[in-house]
Image 1 (cartoon, rainbow, N blue to C red):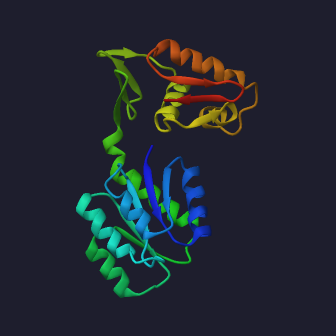
Image 2 (cartoon, rainbow, N blue to C red):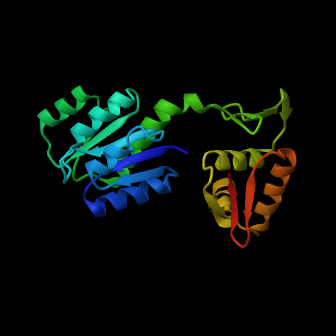
Length: 219
């Protein structure tokens, strides 16, 4: 799961953007002040920062990006600002920002920009992953264990991808139906239990927890 740090002192906008980004299955760490965000820099892996330039305390978005760049020169940073001035954009670019969004902006537009950055920067690096001794190739839709292929059906692999891209996230049976079978599926949600059972049998090292009365979670 990709981690995004959102720094915005407008509480309502901050909470709104957090909810939009979480719908896209991002882990969102939100901060309402530059001071809070500054203390977090360097503590955990962050895949993208969204920084408001003008914050309510003594630390601005400019101050934050300087600290972020000292710690990580590659992580993408999107600036937001209520001021649409060329100088702001120039300063932001000089300090190492990757994009600039002027307020008021559409939450969907910002989410789209975030998705584009994540896809462009991280997708190639995550074509293959290793999980509990399994080598999973997302592009070729193959799974290997000690160089021996584990043959999965289309639905089994779709379920595996969903879990791998959303570790530690809880899914109801209805959520899984929509992800794997699609919105138009009509039938019993017990097909989910059967699919999970088959995936567990083929990949016994996989840690899919059963949430009784609700659904499942990969840890």
